[in-house]
Length: 217
Image 1 (tube, rainbow, N blue to C red):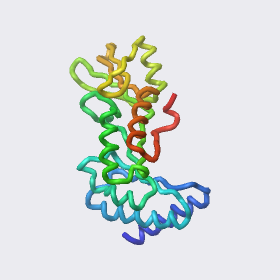
Image 2: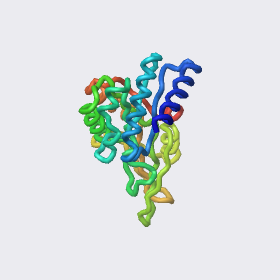
Image 3: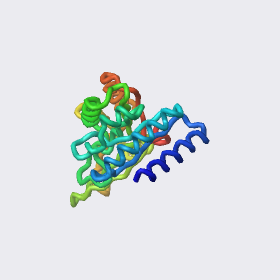
Image 4: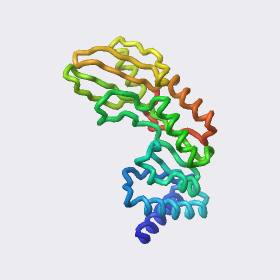
């Protein structure tokens, strides 16, 4: 409803001014197709208020696919100062197969699609400062847990496992056996993040974001 949107915009701007913030980052997830029009209108109304108060507005988005096109990236690009790609969760906790959280191809594809809709200088790509430790049991059951960079290395060292560079995903990869089954880790580290940054530079993006501080080494 218009009144609900206006109330939210007013409250957000008031808090940003109260705490002397530089800007507002919007991270609304699971927006459904039937509510997308109201969501885009909210971003429009918030962008006007931010511009009036000199606040920077950025909007978080999933990696672009056909099924989330109702987020209307091109319209966001007109209204917001920055459109952020959450460039991860290629494989997530509920995945039935083990895999990278953010392979280089997945990240590149997301950037290329977003920059077709939004001027590249307005696009920011977010990188994961985490990975998943995947375990495949003898019966084929796949489980995983998300860990920060240092925790992944500590787990490898505990198991005396070494990683090797996998050019197909742009990451260091490690695989070893434990009593629980086969462990696989697609690492995020300086080398993999540098590869992602190079893609961002090639596409002249506005910047980089990360999820999240404290997960880094």
